[in-house]
Length: 514
Image (cartoon, rainbow, N blue to C red; front, side):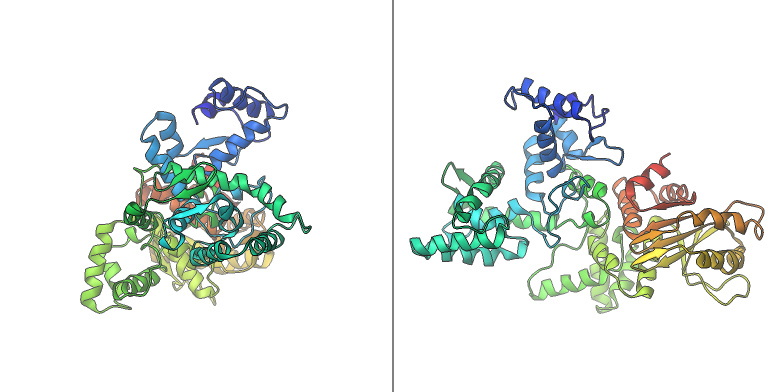
């Protein structure tokens, strides 16, 4: 990271498509003794090293093509808690991650991946069933085929089957694995080529797992756990599972994913009610609470009484009160990742509207859902946002596969919504907006609405926005992580109403910080 900082003049030199910057990074690495003293003509070596740093969320590429160090990356540069931060980045490494989502990443990963590979490998090794070891060959042929964290038992069984097989049986298993998992090869030498292509990856995971100190890499042989330390290792992995559950921010923004995955060890904020747990009486209660809270994006923004009221839907009053106090003491302070899944996968339009309202409430607006208009009309707006002493805005939530702001919808906003809600509760409408569940089009229509509404409300310019649901979530996530007050969040968000469509977080962030 220090070499990258030097090569890019403290990250002020554009990285994307800048071959000279890539070659300069290679040069600095060579001068530092971190790589051989040969600089490629294309700068490919520099790109490879930068890709590694982005994979582990020490930095990311922003919308303008510059590399931005995360908090963990900065701590490495500053030399603070280097081991602890590297260990944390290894154990929170996951697929998919922010780097894998960058537009230039090739080849595209299969979308059903959901795994923390280093954590998975250490858990696998730390098992008496496998005699506390896994060989490089077993990692190559079995561990690297896992796509999800919950495949631990399945991969263990495959390894045991392999160990108990005859020499001929082992070769058949190798060949079968190559045929199933390596689509490039179908010949008899497929197993040999599969091992050659993947053994370097296995070697890398053995090295980084060894660095954590939880297991030991026996060079040229295997990864091993010390049986006497097994309970201690299991306890530490359980701590990481609870503190750092699988991060689904990649669904809302690669930038927010990188920034959150790249938090240093001292910047922790809980983002959910732990992980899903096996069915015991205590765990059933926690899972029930987890399910109930998934409808709320930021638990920390709710009062104890509000949490109690929510939990009383599934718990007796006394239990709800006790759990509410416990949750407030826990102090999430971050986006509820359970809400992310529930919101982005919401199929019911009414529920999507309600969840959108909860996001605006968490941002800091006084939210009214489906309020009656100030003057008689045939339709109602879904969401009205009140702020300040006498200001408000209206939001139309669209749970479509693709939302197009058509001329008819624009006409409806001008004739039915804006004039009939202006003056509600003694407040002036200052903006309008559309929240689209996924992609959208028709951004240019926003300006036409602004122009046409002047005939009905001539004393002010009312501008709008279209924002995708993932970007709206990313904005709230950013505000929570930056510890912005509700007043600051609202003030920041209001800057985005400039007749623009926001389909990525970088574009929104640039607009509100301009």
